[in-house]
Image 1 (tube, rainbow, N blue to C red):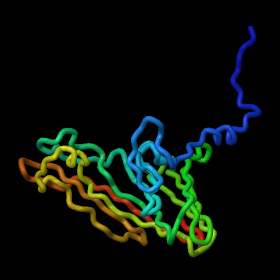
Image 2 (image 1 turned 120 degrees about the horizontal axis):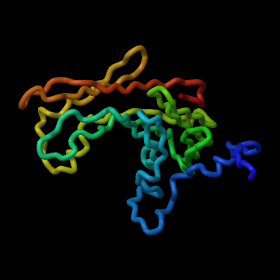
Image 3 (image 1 turned 90 degrees about the horizontal axis):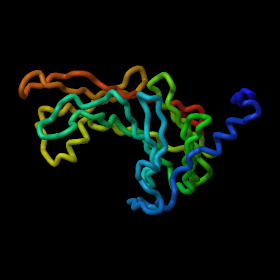
Image 4 (image 1 turned 45 degrees about the vertical axis):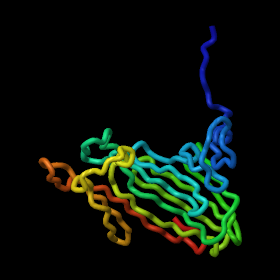
Length: 232
């Protein structure tokens, strides 16, 4: 009986995987499902691109009024307090959103996940040319990179960041007003060695009704201009 061996000889894996890339931003909802649309596109999570390394990552969504949004997340950034009357009160908490905002009118949006390159990619048509972007999450470091290239400097988009208050998202589902003393303070902003940093401090209950700071989450970001039409 001849022994069978698997071999990759002669297989162009880049071409093969490109056939499996996920094209996103459909203009019509899937059959049998009801979606709430904003403009031409659906904001449902299954229409977002995803990048990550098992600890840090982002979901990427297209928002017609604001361009692209990177919803940042990290597995070990969780709420610290069990809030009375709220089930599952210590889940992961939001840490902020990065936005890629077009400089003017934009159309013909695309977005896909490239399996071979392990990155999200997209483009849109600006007022004077095309704008392309791609984004990766580093395999070993807590680092997300967004590279943007525009055909014309006029169309180079703005990259902004909006922090999220690190409180349990379960609160809004419980329909109850939690003890405000148990909630962490809102995040603070600072600049450290030319890097914009947002710091969220968490609280833990030391004894009944008394809370102490315990743990922090920091999100740093920096924009590097390579040329008038290219930024990281």
